[in-house]
Image (cartoon, rainbow, N blue to C red; front, side, top):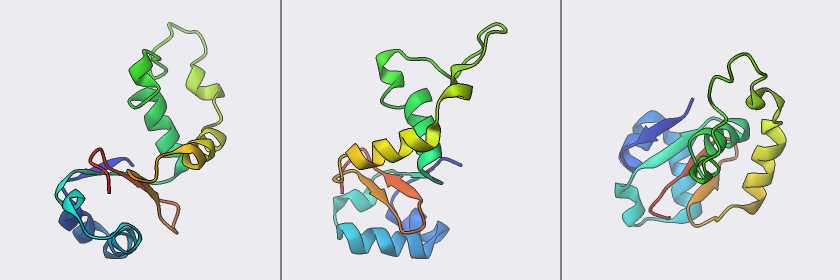
Length: 109
């Protein structure tokens, strides 16, 4: 389930191991005061990008009622899309943990 943390301290309170892994990977900084977005896995991250994130910013609206027509989300391979997004993302604001969980920030690490 997608979650938003109001900074590193809140992430640490939620999952100490995940927070420590992030800190070890990116180091301390002002980012620790900004929002951190959590996705359970690549599929959840891909779904977010399609329905609310980067792709949605282009006017693509896949999370809607199609009046009985097939929902496009049912035909998109979120696993493959998620993997491709991870391979092509900007490491300065995205992080994939050893557990497969994904953390992002609009601020940058």
